[in-house]
Length: 148
Image (cartoon, rainbow, N blue to C red; front, side, top):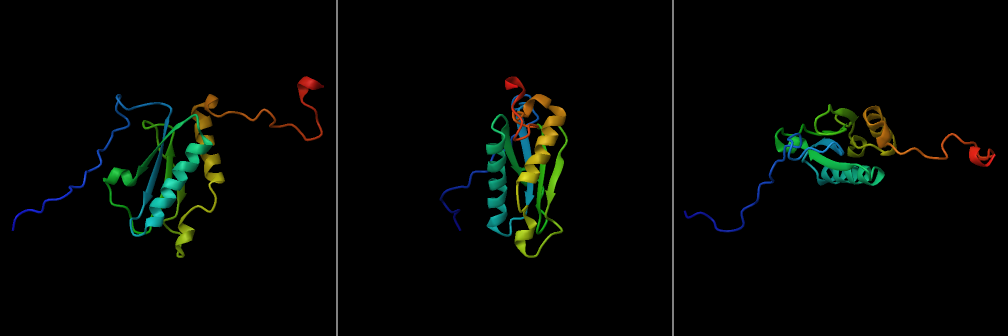
């Protein structure tokens, strides 16, 4: 039987972010392992990466899913890890592996606590990377120090 002619699927080229050609200390890595059994896992992974990118506009956010396809994901897995850049260790933020059913329990209910953990990690290694709120620490009835 002759081979089928048609569109061949392009294999996504894997990029080694630790290599000098691609490395950037301002590129934070989000590692998400998710199962492929349902499309909601992929949607939630992209949703979390978009949330972090919106909350930390001074950082370049790179989403790495399932170790770039090197390791098959575990059934029912949804785990989120974060590293300051490609050459630093990964900090586990969320694991939904032992949660559920129902499936909604596998995902974080709110991203704010995860963003606080990300800010702690960034602040630990890059104290100047986190912008401070100028009104932080002031009481509502107290005038700012410059105007007193």
